[in-house]
Amino acid sequence: MPATGDTSTESRTPLRDQVRDALQTRISDGRLRPGDRLFEQDIAAEFGISRVPVREAIRMLQSEGFVEVLPRRRGVFVRGLDRNQAKELFEVREALETFAARLAAERGNTEGIARMAELADQARRAHVAGDVETMSNANAAFHDQLLALADNELLASMLEPLHGRLAWMFRLNMEPERVCGEHEELHAAIAAGDAERAAEVAKRHVHSSRRMVLDRILY
Image 1: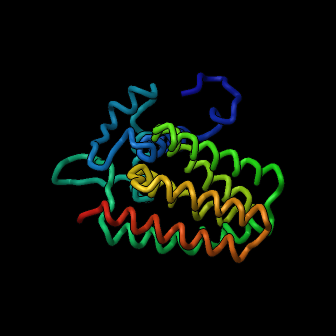
Image 2: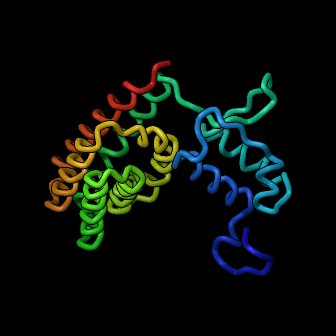
């Protein structure tokens, strides 16, 4: 955590938010997996803070669906997703991300579109090299860039928690060639300013990802 007197943006962020963001990142990138237990005292010791902001951060994560409190097991655990919950998330993601793709095609700027191309190419090269970690990070950044091009703060605030909850599932990517190809196709539609085509590709991309993820969730 930042030292006292630090005037950085991070130091002005409430401690509970800093802890919440750090834990959410670990859940999203797979360092904390469904079923892992969180111990308030260990987290507080790691960050050098009291247990109060840690407890507040855990409440935030619980309300967002990242963790669950299990009284019988007397603890806080990273939450997994069952098939029904995954279906609901993808239904919402389809509506929002299709709209985001349409806006990106209408509002996209040259620099932002070029960044999309770089990320799609980075994912492709990582796939060819068998670098799953780099590919996953590039694909996640591609979706973040799409949202940035849409230039709608309310839409971004609605999609951000969905991306966090789905990120761990995207690491189950068993169809990297398809994902790379759909990202490249989506970039081409946005670069061409074709909003209808971009929305169509985005919808198909969500459908394909939904099928891929549900095939891996057995309960």
